[in-house]
Length: 386
Ligand SMILES: Nc1ncnc2c1ncn2[C@@H]1O[C@H](COP(=O)(O)OP(=O)(O)OP(=O)(O)O)[C@@H](O)[C@H]1O
Ligand SMILES: [Mg+2]
Image 1 (cartoon, protein in one colour):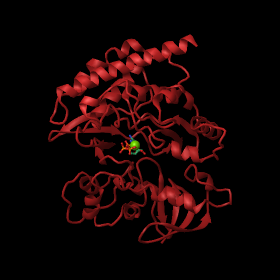
Image 2 (cartoon, helix red, strand yellow; image 1 turned 180 degrees about the vertical axis):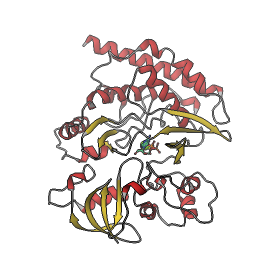
Image 3 (tube, protein in one colour; image 1 turned 180 degrees about the horizontal axis):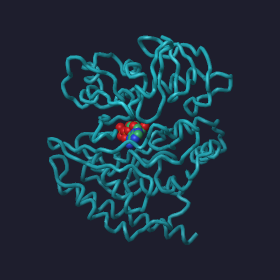
Image 4 (cartoon, helix red, strand yellow; image 1 turned 90 degrees about the horizontal axis):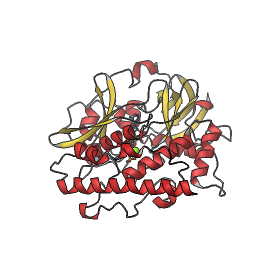
């Protein structure tokens, strides 16, 4: 199948795709290579096909998604890549799509930002029984991440609904607590998550932070945009790449998420969980993407009795050792510690006892977060003395 990879209304490259697997077999023609996804090598004069395939096939639902196998059975496909072309590769996090050659398709008539989309795929991903004639035109086909999730139009807004994981189903409540923490820290650039319960099960919901003129470019792609030299640490390399691309404000942003993630005991700030926003018409960089996906935190997968604030936990993205990673924070002086003294009450308010989370766990979280605030105070003191 021949398609033109489009970035909104801009033709980028013409490709030959395998009908069954959606793999890019051949790059046939270049159009506007500046509009390619960030991080694809074009030094030979054409996009690197392996990298373009990685990016394109990487748009499909990852193999790690909870409940994927059952959902694929219901959707009548064998693997998630087969869903890509059923929605022209369209997503709600950027404006790329595959336009079959000789089709009359126009972005304005098919994009998910302005046109309604089917609930079928989302329903099936959430374990609801399949309808008779499933409509596969859905942005859920191109959503990333391991947690069960679906895009849904709520009051005309495109919203991402995310579930939690067993046994505590804590992630949605963690996201709501993260939102409160952003407020306490005076952050201006975060995604607002709300938690809600359906049949006793917690979910989080947030609005799309991408619009018809923008795209999310994650830190993985930013990292790939320049060659890594061994003289630079991964932190330096990332900032160098941001500098070269012209993304403003990233150093201050990293200071912020390192502190935020420390307080959240976030173990999953990998390079796919932050990035920058770019205007797809002008290719101008707007700045760091608002903080999203902070749910894999607060000891979500640990037994209550092992919740311990002072125990070293895994950290990402720059160093696996959290103490080492916190040395990257260039400034602690902005942290409003007075505000953070209310976090205990915030936890009490947000983590109501449910069949998944009991009182003992809530107490443990309150104590652990309070201890983390104290650790942070010590870090600030130590920095002041230096
Ligand atoms: N509010 C949003 N607006 C636009 N795109 C979003 C939004 N939230 C998430 N995304 C996109 O969807 C992807 C998956 O969402 P998210 O990272 O929250 O899921 P997850 O399952 O928790 O991921 P992970 O596997 O990293 O834990 C993100 O990497 C991002 O590309
Ligand atoms: Mg994620």
